[in-house]
Image (cartoon, rainbow, N blue to C red):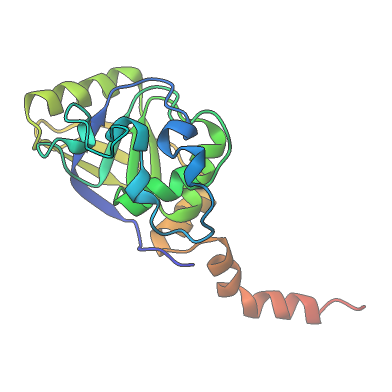
Length: 198
């Protein structure tokens, strides 16, 4: 399944300054029965967003209309715990296209990259600057430039670089998943196969 090309994303951000957010908090296990990647956004952070009677918790950031955008700014060690792909699906389905943190669990990072969500790992110092900027002005805009591998606070121009696997970078720039990438190389694969004796 192809995804939107990710080149430059300029957006306000939703701050979630909580460390060690695990995948069960991102999408509780009771919502994992679906097999299609749709509808999971409704249950993103379900137990933090809603009371037992399904009324929204007023003090949770996703229920605060002040904070909006396609960027989620999480605390250190975001996406730890089980390897469920559904956590990345829920983030994508909710509308986020980028998650920023000072550290990601490896499997969660990979799951995000596989479905078109860019995990941007920054230094703890830069993460703190982002939080302070959003606290001072919820309309603070971040620019994520995938080609240059930079994240910038547009208000003051402060910037930091981030790392990304070159293969995953190419896929995101082109809107490919792994199958799209192989399909794109179909002619080369056939040529290679035909040149090899059985």
